[in-house]
Length: 455
Ligand SMILES: [Zn+2]
Picture 1 (cartoon, helix red, strand yellow):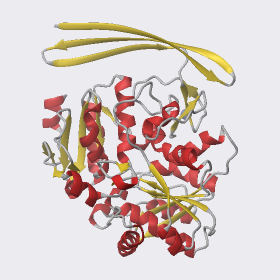
Picture 2 (cartoon, rainbow, N blue to C red):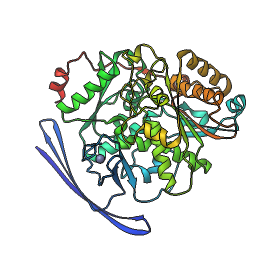
Picture 3 (cartoon, rainbow, N blue to C red):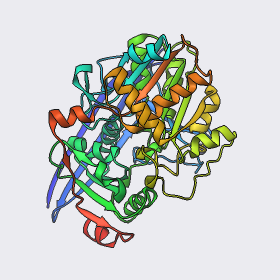
Picture 4 (cartoon, helix red, strand yellow):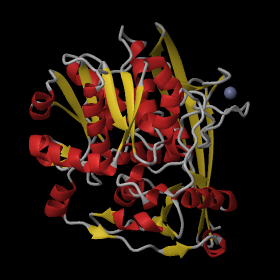
């Protein structure tokens, strides 16, 4: 048995509400190496943290227990939100430039983030004067270096850091592709085990530009995304590894809130309208939450949130158009029929307290359904005008902007922020090459073998 013991004390000042608060914390970590098993114990005392957690439903505020849990202690069906106790000092570009409003103590080696620029060509075609992109993808000429091509890597990197600081041994997560790609590319930024559950019919979307990190286990699930999600959750119940939490994970949401901080940082204004295609709705909720934080340091109007989905699978936009808080997803498996497969989420964060319904209600938002052929049209149109290939989900958002103009939902001089959630696959393929990924395991409803091996 090998025992390593170390203790750490830090003292730093936190300025909040004009009062200087002293923050002291003691971290004791014990590592035991027993028969090849690594056991991690973390004891931590916080007297004052940089943020507190707040249940959106009951309003209960509490210190983060740092157990990588995302539920209210009163068991409310609600999102838990961070409330930062001090303002934000904008630093360098990239997600860690906004670390003041991220629930972590320190950053890791990731250095990228959202790139912002103003559209000229598409804006001219559409008669818009102030169209901006929150651009996520691989396009070095534009300063965009996301080697998984989508914004998922930004939330994954922050969530990994948070998980590591929480002292968890590992996490299990379900993905329809982009999140899995992000863990495959950046999983070894932190020392913890990662189990990816990916449904078979999107497995050909899984890729990497490098060898799979040793701490990442890829599991192909014969079934739908719901099956993969259920398996990831079940696996976490039967093993020492925790479930990633999806959009309930405030580290993920706060990472995506950097989209609006970054826009404000660069252009010194907040948008009148924000457009994004949604599956779970996490990104759109995060932008609204980010705006709420920015509001606390200035006077801004909330951006109207415009969300879009791929017809015929449009549970969120349908519920919103019906004026209902409850989604009613159709019975078929959306992965069989929709082009933008990353939007195939039957359990979005819509009705939950503090979720998308609330964000749309508070901003007078809109919902749109976009067909497969309309997506293809948007992809061609975007390539022709901006010279960039974008992902189908981003095409959904682009087409929803066309629709919003037709319906008179935006003015020609409105400041519009369009989230291009994925782009640059051809560039990435050409410059870095991509590798298709073979699963380590294939499961068909039975987790017994996996649990026996890793439990
Ligand atoms: Zn609560």
